[in-house]
Image 1: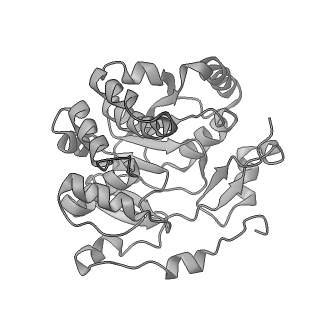
Image 2: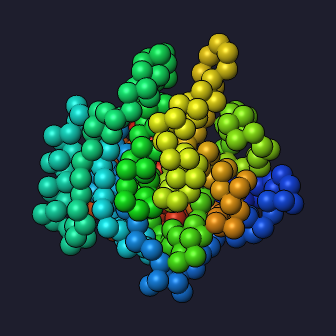
Image 3: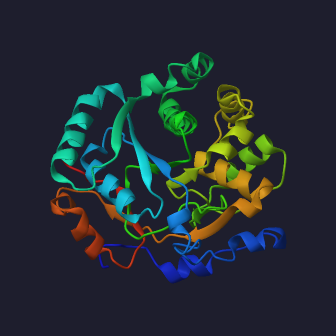
Amino acid sequence: MNKIQAYNRDKRRASWKIESSLYFSAYSNALQVNPLGDSDYELSPKIDLAILVGPLDVEHITWALEGALLTSLNNIVNIYIVTPSTQEAHVNQKIEAFYATSNLATCKIQVLTDEILLGNFPKLQARLRKIPASRSNWYKQQLLKWVVASKSDRSCLIIDCELILLKPRLWVNSAGVQVHYVLNDLNPQYVFSIQKLFETKLPKVDFVSHCALFQKDILDILSQGDMENFLLKWLNSGFTKYHPAPICEWQTYASFLVAFYPNRIKVGFQDQPLVTDNNEIHKFKYESLRHKYQDFAAIYLSHKDLQH
């Protein structure tokens, strides 16, 4: 615990503010990691899993896979690893090692490069090229999550590779009600951009949990059957006249549910302290991490001070 600085769960919980009684019922279960319970898990729908792997994330792939597979009460069918083509070979090596050493490797794992995923979205690629280089990758990794979720045959759990899940949870039940987690570091610009997109008032609650289930039917409604057109509109809502403004995929999806389908979401709380990613922590296997951080539902790895 002494390695997790500036983190106080009680303080975070106490700081939540419910903006309107209209949304109170959506947050009534906010102190639970698994607000959907587990009584329904045998009837719950199967899901797919997608993990976004950036340049500094390759060493975490095994942790991310084990965390998702061991904690999901929904059966996972297909797994997609999304990564730039420049590190595809390294990622494939990690996947081969996972198959060789883990008894969890029963799902089909497919590596999808950024280029493959965005290949069928020429207007989106053209729009990305107009974004300043300093910000384009930040938007691109968000777009990849929308695209891989839309490609999936079923509802898809999207996870940033830096997030290692530690405690069990049901992501969606047989009635189509899903969990989404709240944190406590809201960027108000996210709310501003998304209110512009949806043309409705939204609660000022932080939904940037670095993991979320994107339900297939909700995505179809959100995109109205044209994901590229929706994503262009979404991108543009994140721009002012003169410069890019923050917008967030996690915040967008959860806000849409809360605003238009509140009966399809239960909000939970996930303790996920920031843990420094360094050579020392790489000595741990997943079960050792789970034991070391047993009081938490997940950990989020910071790349600061990482030395390879």
